[in-house]
Every structure is written in C-alpha cells, then in structure tokens.
Image 1 (tube, helix red, strand yellow):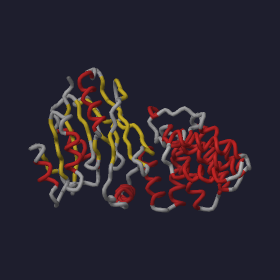
Image 2 (cartoon, rainbow, N blue to C red; image 1 turned 90 degrees about the horizontal axis):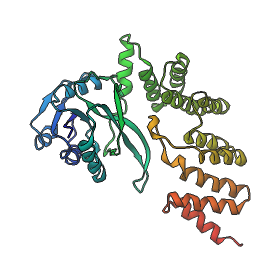
Image 3 (cartoon, helix red, strand yellow; image 1 turned 135 degrees about the vertical axis):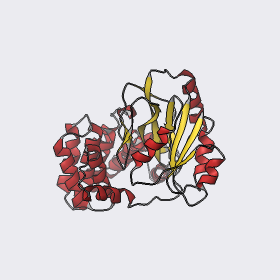
Image 4 (cartoon, helix red, strand yellow; image 1 turned 45 degrees about the horizontal axis):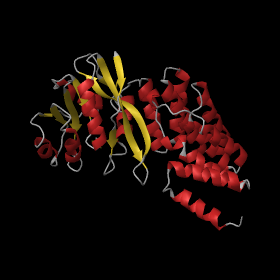
Length: 357
C-alpha cells in the first residue's frame, strides 16, 4: 500500500481547518502543517491531529510555502489540500481504494477539483489538479501565485475528488498585489503566470489592462492550449465590457484556432446571439453545444451545465420566442432530465400547461 503525507500551508484558518482535517486524517499516514503566521486558533486545532507543525514566514510566494511543507514529508506521496478543502465520504472511500492499488511507478495522481456549485450542491465548475505527487521525485511547486507542479513520469487520473468549500472570502487584492510587486521588481512573468495576471486584472475590472495582457500572452504563442482558450474567452469578456461586441464575438471564434469547439464556447456564442434576439443563430450554437463531448481530463476548466442543462433550457427559450412551442416544451423536458428541480424548468412547465392546446 502506498503511504501518504498530507501537506498543508495555513494561516488563520480556525473556521475551516478542523472540517478539512477530519475529512482527510484517516487517509494520510502523517500530517504536516506549515503555518505562515496565524494569530487565531489554527495551531491549536492542528495540534489535535498532528504534532508536525512548522513555522514558515510568509514571503508572498505560495510555491515557497508549499515546497517547505513537502520538504518535511517522509511518506511515498504528498497530498496537498487547502484549509477550505475537504473530501466527501464517497471520495474518502475512493482515495483509500486508490492507496491499496496505486502502482509505485506512478509519479503524479490527477484528481478533479470541484470549486463551483448550484443551490442544490451540484458541481457547476471543476478541473483536474495534480493532487498526489511522488515524494523526492524531483518535482517542485513553481509560481508565486496560482502555483503548480509540472508532472513528470507516469500520470494517473483518479476517481476521488477534492471539494473546495469557502465559508468566507479571501483577500481579493492579494494575488494582484503579488503580481504587481514582482513586475515592479523587474521580474518577467512566464506564460502561465502572465495568463493568471490577466485574469486578476479582469477580476478587478481593469478591462483594458487585462485585454492587453491576454493579447500579449496569446501573441507570444507559448501558452498551454487550455490557457489559450480561456484567454480568448476573457478577451471576449473584456471586449463586451468595453462595448466592443463584434470584437468579443471574434475572440470567441478565435478559440477554434486551438482546438475543436467546446460546449462552454458554444454556449458563450449562443449567449452573444441570444442577447441580440437572434434566436435562430443562438439555437444553432446551443444545439451544437449538446453535441460536444465532455473531456475533463484535458485539464481545462469545465462547466458541466454546458454539456446538458444550460443549452437545453436556452433552446427552450429560443424556440418559444420563435413560436415553436412543441420544440420549446421538448427542450424544457430535456433540461429537466439534467435538473428536475430547476426553478426555470418548473416555471416553463407551468407556463406551457397554462397555454391552450
């Protein structure tokens, strides 16, 4: 059986740390906590689960802190979690089963990271992350923000997932502040960090600056295909905010340079036409979204609703406005097959039932 070191970096996490450790303590053979300056009850809570608690001064560098946590690991693999992560019961079971059968030749285990949820708790946003990393195999965290381990050797895609459940907002300016400090010091951002810098500018509504960064990132041609596609989407979002709708649509179409159409992109194009009341064109793109094959293992951001519920509910509205009630009702019921309790589905059904035959 493979042995696992749970490695965490924490700071002032008293409100979530116990929940995380309770979900993961039975999975790990040792727990390592690196504290970067807590002044609340974080250390007291951590001490209930482990005596391997280390201090590490915060350096505005997540990779430095994560590498420090890994440096104390003594088991075969390192499992990383954030304090507001947890493993649900079914994922704990899948994780333990993986430990029993894990091929020692595997260097990295990739697992889904669920970070967005609807009102019923269903996942609306997820992506794969490197979750188990073979210890002492030459892999290190890189990137001061949005840190990553580049896999080497044999990679396995696992069945267990990690669920990210925030209970309070984090510092919204921290990441942008770190990037801007690096740039002020003359540091050149490598492609992945340039991409995420653009996203931080976008989150701060600095549309023109974000657009410039994304365009520069794409022009260099050194980005990962999934980041290229997402950068195109964010160019479109910036163009919309800058009241440049035609250029926004062009940016969405530019994603096809990098790969076949994704359902997420088809839905965005459908939305563009829908907002302009061009319902036949919108219906075309929503219908195309339904033909796209979902492939989480490509590593990019995935919005599960785009592969079923969202295009169906939008096709219902499109065909309703085009006067095709039969098709509209059919797509509403198809949407119901994905989300039976959807308020939109129930609302549409009630309207259809109230209309004369």
